[in-house]
Length: 578
Image (cartoon, rainbow, N blue to C red; front, side, top):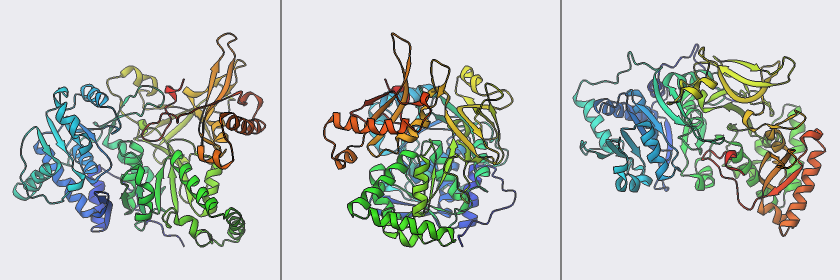
């Protein structure tokens, strides 16, 4: 029988600091984080050690009067990054996590826009903040993180100067804890004021500053707690997505702590394969592109070994046994699963819709996929398929504590815009009341910009993004995401975007598929030259057209020689496509 977490009745979370305090009290010296120093030496930090670290950093930030100040946070996932985020918020500062792949001029621009007074950064940004520090006109303190020399109990003194280090700040906190009567000021803190400022990834245009409060994130933790209780203190989660993004921070870093999970921190996107073998995770939070890549890795491995027929036969036998309530998948497919570390059993996928066929394929191998739906403005979670349920086509059931309604254009319409309300909904957009008013009503209802519907079992289904919809001459609406789901099943297609193109002379809108071919698959299929690849993919598209209503047919195929531009969370930037 599968182990599940023992849930606390009427679970409430007052603050992010309380989450780490709870973790320390419940799980003590158990490893909270596992990571590599210098990408070679594995190190662990326990629940107790992390709570002590955050306590000391918070005391230091209180002493440095961080309250009400904007603090830019730039860097890769690390213990210092997480400690800085939580400590600044707990000290009543406003943390501003930025995408580490931003250009230098963009970082300067965000610094000016937010009027940041403090910057905390990893060594990759040392050159920027030492050579161009004069351009950060509002910043008064620069704090360097150094992942490689991380020590929990630094003994060197804190130096009060413009340029300092994470360890120096920690040394100050260490001194304050041992030599003063200072304590973390939890009582009376306003957890509903602005404390987290996130800039959206900008997949549909220029990024907006999403203002969140601590209560927003705590509401997500309270909602997710009874839903993902099949995650336990036996689980190891590998963190691979960008931590500045609220999906990874909320679902990949904070939520696993609710169940005593150990979080393994990846060395970076290039090292994921190596880290999977090293840490042997049981759970991973992914975006669809990542899940697709992992499945293709499995397929290529099976093909290389010439075991396609053996695998198909094994799946057939396994599925028959499952009908008799006999689960042999871990044993039958142990060699296949070894490529994913051997222990993986759960994927939680968000950010976009995952092909239902992909969900079924992973299930055949013994990996359960739970899809979720969220948006930065909702901190970010709105819905998720509970881990004890299976639905490959839905993005889940509404999170506990939230309300939803579908705003239909006509009463008999099949779908409408998804509108939600709850404690996880943002405060508004930073310095942009007009844009805030467009999506957030005075009584707290938030317009997601997504079209969808809810079935009689409470499952939510997304039909498409409002901004992406293709409106045809006859008034029919075509959702590119629906067609992309079919096209993504074609092995010859590496990446695809469906969009509408209007003929300047006739005004007729055509449904066009922009495709970046999968070079390895094309080569394996014996396709040489652009014409051969075009014809093969076009034939696949014509076959898919036969499964779609005539108005949804792809009218034209365009091949691309370069991949699509993406955000660091691996979403295609549709607004950049011409």
